[in-house]
Length: 460
Image 1 (cartoon, rainbow, N blue to C red):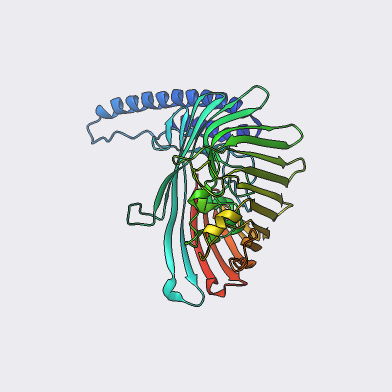
Image 2 (image 1 turned 90 degrees about the vertical axis):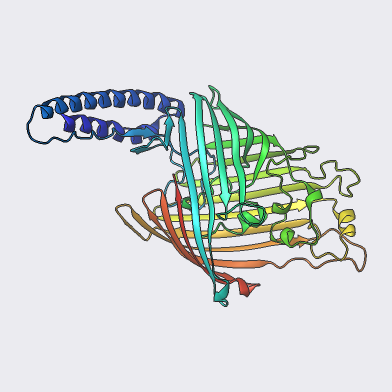
């Protein structure tokens, strides 16, 4: 009796995978609710069987131990985030629509509420100075998705970086996403809150299982600041021809935060002035747009643009009319066992000459342009059962201070170098949720940064 019931439960659980592949999210929810009801019925039958067994055993003179009925499998929707851009370097699905697991109350918080997570631990050893070797719990993220009904959901993600957060530590605690999304009958989706900007290949697909290499590539961290998020409203839709469009009105950057005495602006111009929804100045708002086309199997072509004034109407600020524009073009192609991708990103900040004159003598004035690009190739060399080995190579070139606005004689500053980086390594995936990584990075200009990296990541 128990074996038959368990077989039925397993069969019900296995049905979830093909359903997820063909059904829409709304249809999937209906079917999952039906499956959940059937599982509850099976659990009731198991309880009745256990009660009968206990009664029989109590009649025996020998010692008896009441058997523990195994829990019926539960169907769990995973992935707190829904994205519209395919990840660059995905060897396993980074954010599956659904998975089947024996869920505990810690993961299945209710029929409409799901817990998700991702995280990574990394180790770096500089080639020329082993004394600077470092291990870091880079990040741990907890996500919660709650579906109010078939078309309305809330998505939240909370992140901890560098293991410890306090006034004297380098760690950071932040809300990575917090928004509500509504889907309409024609497939149009509207959302409001704090959400990721759909720029590039990595920003909306940044889990460690979704990209090659221990660390996120430099172009999509220094030029497009991962994970870039803004507060505002957005609209998106996926059409039958494979085209997905996104647009919205959001907060922007705050140029008054620029610290010309720090090197942070050289590392990433936009990361040094982002607001992340923290008491964000909104005197000047920004707009964004993105297009991604998947009309051919295995091929993704897309681009994005984000623009807005960043003076934020700050009183007496010499760059009131400064405007930021960031755009990118990207492509990804996955024929057979190959995974090929490329991206170009460029940013400009206008009307910075008066501001930079106030920074005379400081090491880091505001650049008028910055850019970066990369190409990447990966090949699935070996696969056995749940194990997959995928070597890759990536070359990227970027400059965070490509040019400056004209300055009076004697006040000019040298532009930044065109840094080039080769990254060669491999991802070793264990199933769909765990990845081990190893790579070596060779820098063209600053060779002191040459390094070996090891990483462990997960996502569910």
